Image 1 (cartoon, one colour):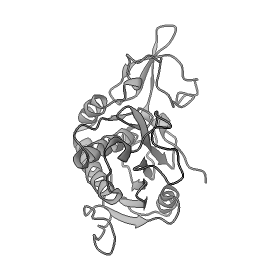
Image 2 (cartoon, helix red, strand yellow):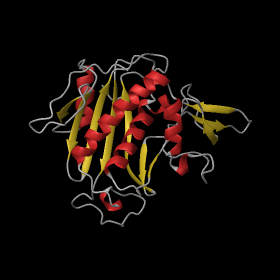
Image 3 (cartoon, one colour):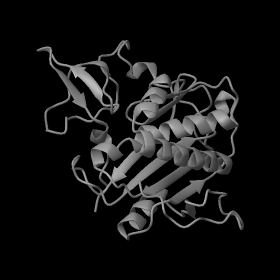
Image 4 (cartoon, one colour):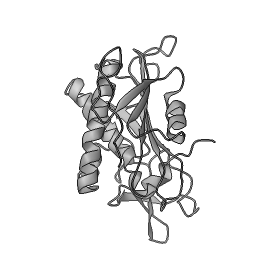
Length: 261
């Protein structure tokens, strides 16, 4: 993964980032801004962000030097990095769990998500760029539902973790770099173990439902997704047992989104 971007300054309201990263505040949607920058050929390491007391939105531009099938690991990698950043800054008793399709769960309730976008949807091709997007509710939005009105969703502050958006984004960025280095050197082993140790129970083989929510409708070959979840393969793809006993793998790259032109 190429991360040879220019470093960003920590003065004048800019984020305090490691030398390989730089930031760009977004007036609108940071994901759209990051996609535009990636299409224009920006270097890897640009973080577009929009921060408020109630919401953290960010998008990191990456330039993979491998196939989309392998680079799709950036989605669970970004999730693990976020869980570790929240754990670093938040209370130790906070339970942060990770959904296979990018969701974040805190103390049993949904709390934001990550997504991965690319210029390519070909698993065997080497994409020109990836955008790792993060959208995390920090506190109830003004005019939004009262805390507790929808117990299936939550915010960090509602769970006893009133974290600062800037500090959390800076911590996430540092953890992302650490994990990219580890993944580049050692492959999927550590990421596989760490992600599974934090997996949302609804996305594990012993869940009450047959398979996780939010799955794409088709396998990469166009076959409709079906079957009961039995585990994860070495690349964190879902293993789904079919009615005829076969096991098919739904790879992580099936989750990669291709933005509109």
